[in-house]
Image (cartoon, rainbow, N blue to C red; front, side, top):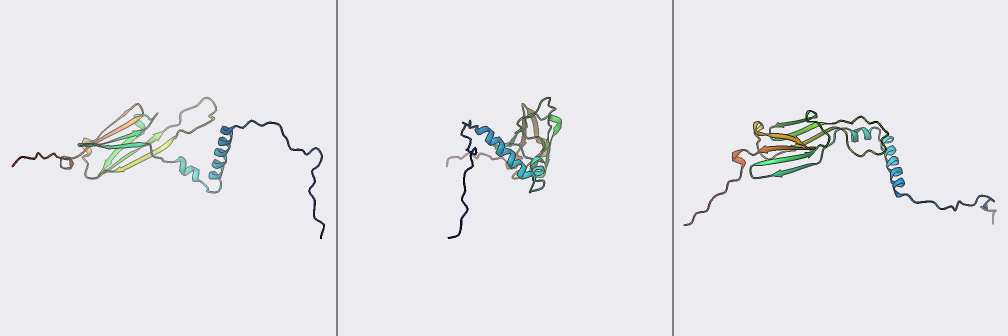
Length: 159
C-alpha cells in the first residue's frame, strides 16, 4: 500500500472555543450587503434599473358612478406629481426626492426617484370631469363614469 499523507494537528492550533454571541440582525445585514454586491457586479446595471422608475402602492375602487384610485405617495409635493388621462388610460408620474441628510444613513428601505403608474379603465373617460387631490401622502383620483356606463336600476312592475 502506498504511503498516504497523514493530517496532524499542530500544537497551538486548537480551535477558539470562546463563546460567541449570535446576532441574527448582523447576519441579515451581511446577507443584504452580499446580495447588493452580487446585483452590482455580474448583471452590470441591474441595480440602476431597480433604482429607476417604480410604481407606488395603489388601491382601485369601483363605485356605481366612478372609479377611485388611491396611491401612496408619502413625502411627495403636489408639484412633483403629474396626473394625466388619455383615452381610457390613467397615468400617474412623478418623483420622490431624497431629502438632505445631516448624519450617516445606516439603513435605507424607502424608495426615492421617479415613479410611474398606469391603469387602463374599461370604457370611455370624460377627462374634464376627473378630479385629483393629495392629502397626507395619499393621492386620490376620482374618475366619474359616463352616464351610459353607469348601472341603472330598473323597477319591476306588477302585471
